[in-house]
Length: 185
Picture 1 (cartoon, rainbow, N blue to C red):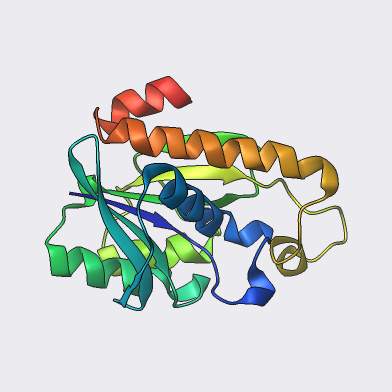
Picture 2 (picture 1 turned 90 degrees about the vertical axis):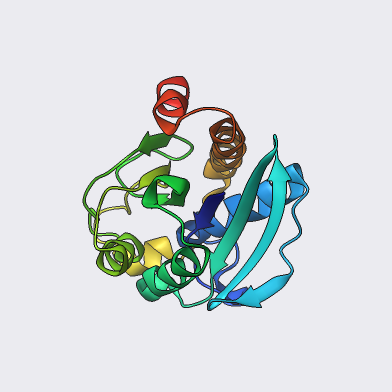
């Protein structure tokens, strides 16, 4: 079984913001892979389905970004999944808009959702798909930037990145994550 988690903040006021690109990706995955997000449990909205014969869970933690790890740990413990069966999708200010980067481990890099995940799982060795959102302009607050909407010229790049990340998720149901990394990085 594979657990695909997209990080974001619940609620209408956060929809379409840079920090919610993980949620956007899960929504797109659900549509493309035919998985309905219709269950509320584990402090999350999630859905289960089959992709290429592999059981898949798509998960959106409803804990708000800074506590995302709690929801991930709860569902991981319930289904007794190993960290190798987890991928976390989230925004990254160190990548340009629309660029994706897959990794198998690493630090939180200042991302509070990843910091919470590392803390709750007790390891930094889990699969990640980072989606670039770029850095704020000089003098602009990081919080205002990540909780802000995309510039018109960024929207197409980010939309393509969400599609690419979904393709990577689907590929992961058929091949090891390292091979998926080599294909998409």
